Length: 108
Length: 125
Image (cartoon, rainbow over all chains, first blue to last red; front, side):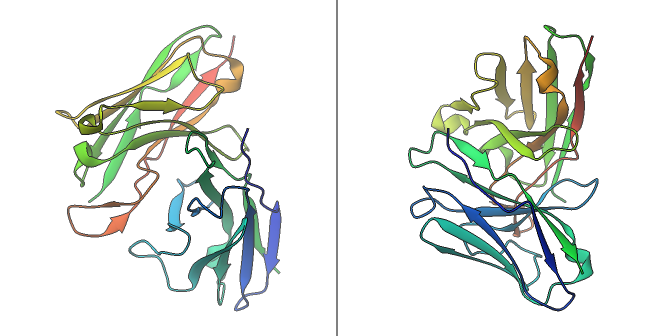
């Protein structure tokens, strides 16, 4: 079965850049999506189609891909960005839709 | 305002059935692919299944763990999405979210992905 691999945790200092990676064999051909989930809340889409921002998402959130890796960057991270982040994509056939295991972003 | 509201969760015994519902507002429901995503206590997100629009045949896809046991349907006349869950297992215990998952354009013109607040399902004897 298809898998997306994320680091379990990432730490960042306020104002610095946080980078969260997502690795998957189909990412060169399939879009990555990123969701933010704060404690006790429903997820929120922060990046779609690799690098686009939905309405209302701050400009400090950006996405990129290179080969089999997608990256969510938070430039000038703020303590309100502390949350779990999940990538989502499909396998090459489009039949398997999966989330990565999630990455907890914490502040130093 | 874009909104998804789930209902129908509860406590059910292993082998039992449950039907979840989700009502949508604030976007053109009949144009949206709709998904169910679940989250077991303390765990990550898990995609459950999807239904395409009725103009595309209302085709459904399911994750392997629920295929053959769960059925997604929609009633565009009521802006409703459903998840029929049969032969429930303890591993199905989770918070179930109704979601567009991918971004859609709302009636107000913004581009967002819509999620409900979830409805809890507990499978236990």
